[in-house]
Every structure is written in structure tokens, then in C-alpha cells.
Length: 320
Image 1 (spheres, helix red, strand yellow):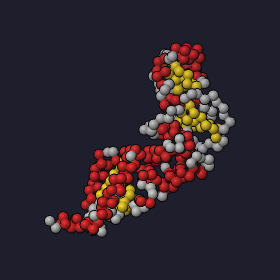
Image 2 (tube, one colour):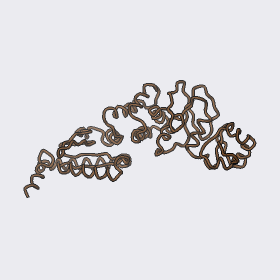
Image 3 (spheres, one colour):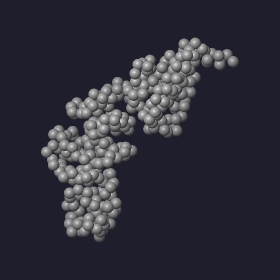
Image 4 (cartoon, helix red, strand yellow):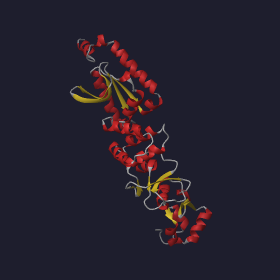
């Protein structure tokens, strides 16, 4: 509610919100609103919905405007619902809504609407209704191009917006999904222990196939009395492969832990190769070549190193 004496122009310029015309007209009258739109002070975002000129392109204001405009029962959906949950995610080109089947609203150009006969019970996220996280992931998957669907899933998992269990539950309620088997496989990997999206990208992409059958995934090592789990391990060659995500390996503390971990593995004769998301997606051949060369070279020198990684080398160093 505007303070007494505040003009419509000042009020709209001071708040990042969308408003129903009926609500504003109680304070300023419809004539003042029409004049504000005509003069450019306000922007008509949809039928019966306006916002201040400076706020009209703001993603949050558009999401609010979409819910104010849409029929009862509507909710933010797909990529919009995911990005509404996590501000770090890239905003979609249009605000995506899901509405009850049978609704035929005149859709604004900045909005994309789908309808369903059975809508999931929405969650209230930052004041707006949004489809549950698992349903949002599947909606975003369906709307994406076939080449982008894996990235949609991995981004949702990586950001922590949704859990694999939530997507698994939503799959039971949504029978008609493009590339359903591919999505079910990604969910199954998560549920079976490939908890890092990068591990999934690696195992189902760059490091797929029979030549990597000797690698153990989420392999357990005991080094200096401590239990260590590495993302992938060629035990005979003593080659450990780690997949680093920016969210979990970018802080100083995380980097120090990685350095300590690599040093401990090296002291036991294991060489560690680390790859990022950009490495796996932009230059997978380079990743494969480095790992293949490391494994082949260390196996070729196995007679020198001994059957246990580092045994003879460590012994020689102790003997000096």
C-alpha cells in the first residue's frame, strides 16, 4: 500500500512488484493508471497486470505477474520453477507456467503456458506457487532439446535443487516423457551411488565402453590409516581419477583438502588425475587420452614398481 500523498509514478518507481489493475485502482483510480501506461511510467505486462517501467523486465517481477494473471491453480513450472528456487541458475527466455486443463488465457509474449488435467500440488517458493522440484526437473527435461536434456538433469542435481528420489517419485506420476529411458537411467545411477553429476557424465560419456571396464567407481582405499573414496580407480595401474565440481572444489579449504588428499594418495603410489565439468564436456578426448596414457605407462613399468602401487619405489627411498 502506498504512503499517503505518494504519486503513482513515485510508488511504481520505488517497488519491484507487479500489480493487478483492480488493486492499484483502489488507490489511484483507473484513469491515473491508463495515463501512467500511456506516458511510459507503467507497463501493461498482461491483461489486468501492470508494473513500473524499470521493473517490467525483471525476472522476479515477471514471475509474480504471471501468477497474478494466470487462472487459479497455476504454478511456475520447468526451468522457471528451478531457477526461481536457485538464483544462481540461468533464467529462461520465457516464464513457464502450468495451468489446469481447460483454461484458455490469452498468453503474453513473455510467457509460455502448458496445461494438464492433473496438476501436482505446488510448493510455495519465495511467495509464489511452483511445481515440486522433481516435477520441475522432468518438465524442464521435456521442454529442452534432446542434446540439452542431460545438462538440465545434471544442473538440477549439481545445484541441489532436486534430489534423485524426488525425480524418481515424480516419474511415477508422469508417464509420457520424451527420452524416458534415458532419464530413468540417470536417476538410477544417482540412486545406486553415482552421486556426483560429473561421475555420471564421465561413466556414461567419456569413460564409457569396454576399455574402461577395469575401473572401479567410488573405489575405497585405505591410505595412512584413513579411508579414502576416489571417484574412479584403476587399481592395478594405481591411477585415481577425480571429478571436480566448481561448487565443491572452488573454496580455499576445499583446494587444500584436495592437495592433502592427492599427496596422501601419491605417498601410497597412486597418481591422481583431476577433471572439471568443462574438461569432460568440452574436451572429453583429452581426458581419455591422459587417463589412457597414465594407465598404460604405469602398467608398462609395473615390474619396476612392484605389484602394489609404490612398494618398491617407497622401499628404495627409505633405503637412501
